[in-house]
Length: 232
Image (tube, rainbow, N blue to C red; front, side, top):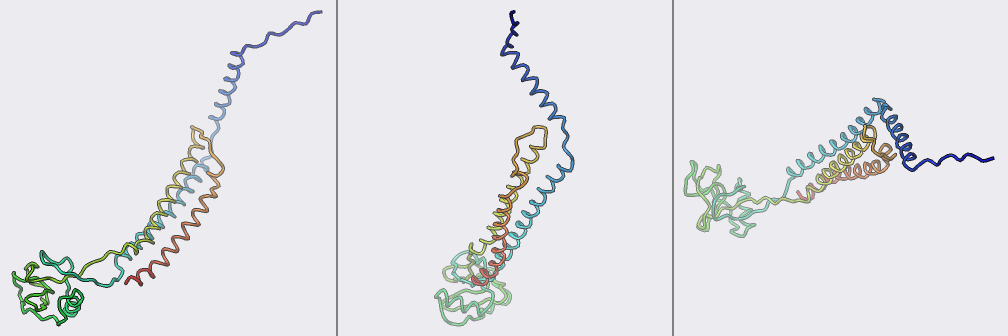
């Protein structure tokens, strides 16, 4: 007897069946609802990281403020035009400043201009080899080659701002890492169904990064007073 042979399905038919199966599976995946608690959990995770970044940023701001107000040793210079940005406002400091810049070692004398004049600069200045001091700073004149002003100079020490810079960079790194992971979590939960990894939810690298940045933050906070004290 002859056996009836079944016709072999064509390649097009097989591909069509596979396409329909994949489409059914895709619709089933789209129909799966994500528990709202999962969304809230992802949001809370991001907010926790953001709080850490805010603490770092606030600490950096505090360190910048303390670095700007840290006491520093005064340095002095001379001006032969314009006015002093930071004048020497005491007679004792005027005598010391004149000696430091090499003008004279004599004590400053009161210039006697109680109400002020327009042809002499305020506060500490040198005129005709005599160191003079306008006590109340009421003079309105400008510095010149004949009336040399002695001014206090501000030297900005960027070394004082290193702890604040470390904390500021740590804040940006933590916030950027948290936002990147947050987008991956939302992509996996959303309709686009992006591929996610277990590390997006159990973030071991993030834990290491937090440990390092926290150590740097504590180191910056502890070292800032010592740096300010040494520079003062």
